Length: 339
Image 1 (cartoon, one colour):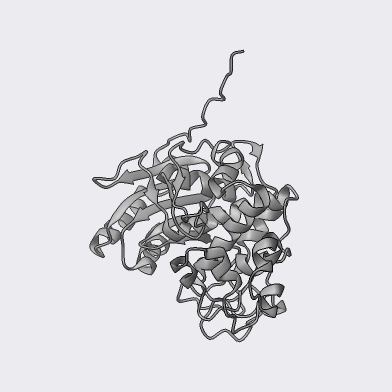
Image 2 (cartoon, rainbow, N blue to C red):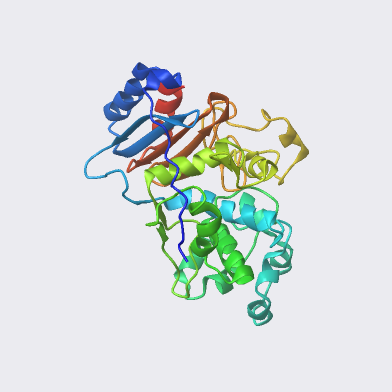
C-alpha cells in the first residue's frame, strides 16, 4: 500500500518592509550585536507567519542543529501540556506518585511527598538553591526524591534544572516514552521540524529535559509560531489555547527581593506587581517560560544566548542562537533597536 507524506509547510518569505518591519531597524539590531561583541550564530525573524529576515554566521548554517541548553526547558513544558491535554497527567499530580517502586525504597521527606508537577513547572520546589546536584548521581530520580528541601514547595522561585529533569522523568515513567519519542508525533512532525532533532540522556535513558535538546533555528521559529498562534500551526489546532496561556502567564515572582513569594499569589493578578523592569530575569516566571520587559512579550531561553522570543502584540517571533556571555545585552538590542 502506498503511503503519501504530507508536504512540509514552509514559511513564506517577504522583504522586511512588506512584513511591516523597517529594514533599518533590523540592521541596527545586527550592528548593535556586532558593536557589543556578541557572537551571534543565527537568527530568524517572522511576522505574520512570514520570514522577514534571517541570517547565519560562519561556520553555522541553515539546517544545522544547535544546542539549546536551557531553552530545552520550554520544549519539556510543552510535552507536559500535551500530556495534560490528553488526560495522561495533571499539574497537581504528586511527583512521588510517578515512581512508587523507587519511592518505597527511599527515605522521602514530608515536603517531597507534597511536591507536585506544578511546583516543578514553576521552579518553586523549596530547594535552596536548587537540585542540580542530582546530575552527579548514577540515579538522578532517586537523588531528587531523597534530596533535602529547606523551603516550602510552592514558596519562592529558585531556578532549578533538576526540577525540569523530573518533568521529563515523570512523563517517561507514565508513558514509557522518552521526551523525544513523546514529542515527535505531537510536536516535531505536525510542525514540520527537523528529523535531526536529538537530546542528551542520562545513563539510564532519560532525556535531561532541562538541557540537552539540539534543534535547528527554523525549529525554534516553528515552536515560537505555535505559541504565538496560541496552539495553532498552519491552520491546524495542535494545543488548546488555554494551555498556551497557562504556560506563558506569570505564575510566580522571580524578582530577587520578592515580597510576594507564593506560587499563584493573588498579588500576581496585577501584572505590574512585584517585578523588576530593569531585568528580563525579574519580570516573573511561567511554566518554563520567562516574561520579558516589553509588555506582553515572553520567551524561552538557554545559556550563551539561545532564544525563542514571542511578541504577541507585534505578531512576531524571533529565534536566536549564539555564544554570548551577556544574555541581557542581546535582548536589549532587540528591545531598543527592533521593537
